[in-house]
Length: 86
Image (cartoon, rainbow, N blue to C red; front, side):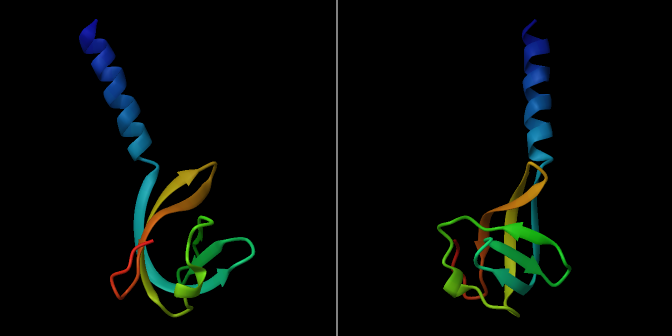
């Protein structure tokens, strides 16, 4: 029984991790009203309300960690060229 519970827990953890990702690219567009950041590959990511939008500029290289929530890429962490993280 313990083996079955452990296997189920491991499967749940594995399936949750499948919805996380990381990417990098150049910022193409920032929609400050909708809190959406679009990279040069055309993919869009939802920013959180605490993000310093003034620190983000089109053409800036960025590394993004994100989760997929309700079909939307939601940024969980980011690294800017100067090493700052939000």
